[in-house]
Length: 441
Image 1 (cartoon, helix red, strand yellow):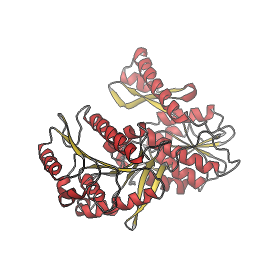
Image 2 (cartoon, one colour):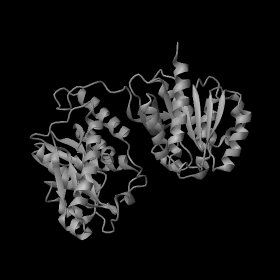
Image 3 (tube, one colour):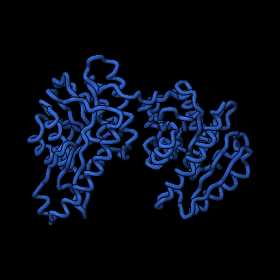
Image 4 (cartoon, helix red, strand yellow):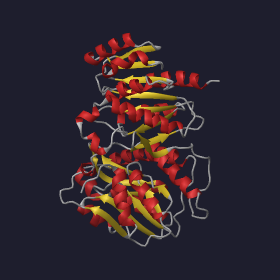
């Protein structure tokens, strides 16, 4: 059994969970990957959504192998057999625990900053993750839930190693697992898209759940805190006759919103685009990342290079966004997505405040470059000579204010250390400058 992504797995898991007697339950996810799975489960149960922050303790020389886990409230689970098999001394164990405790505290501060924990006392805790390999982290989560007063603990996951499922029956009152394949090797092998979930996506999903809970008086959701940014969270973008999944993040008092157009073979979960989006959010800018193609279209190569189609989807997404926000709009395009962004920005009346291209293919939009009115920044890697030449030619055809920025030593995907950080900084400065100017009276 395989799933397209975590959200798809969550929908299927939700259909199984609702068969049980779980009225009055609280859905608690293991961040970060468990939260997109848990969100559909919480919606199906009409239950509050919260997180239990737990950190795996990995063997130093093989961090993917867990010898234990720790959780909020001081919970600690150690697998002594693994510790002995790995030959770990007490100092090594303590060092790993210290490091992971610091990361746990950081995430707690991030997720609990503006919200209180949903009380578990006397309630059923439905603990959700995207999958289970060894079970150490899930066992620690069960211990945390009981320490917080849960009267019953149900562990629900799409996929797990068979031996882990049996082991966890001692930690949870019930284990719901859609698939426990005998050839299980890693959680990610059962997902087509297993890109890392960001802190921002976790926060957006929790905020969305809080808003839903606030509409149900007496439901027992989190205490009211500062109002979340309007419109933030997973969204469905209606564009060009199709509905496309996306993630909208709008910080309070955002000076503008940047719409991302990913390159061929990528999606809204692109880790490179997500890293840039995080930097923009930190600078007070909103972001919209969405899939330009449906799942069926994404598998057709001709579609991924159909720039007119991609541009229409981008124009439609911009229209959808403007129905929800009056902020200035910018475009960030990567590879073929940059060509789509330039074509969309060249449309009559587009009113795009700024465009940034990362490793873009402006040659695919060459006949429209002269019509682009938005200030445009072309970012290219110094070790990407072919694309660098294409962007130099494009710069000569642009009539709008524009700059060409070359990141030394960067290849086409900006995989070299520090190069993507340079892209994020360049994009942040460009958008902050031009979106703020567009929004000024």
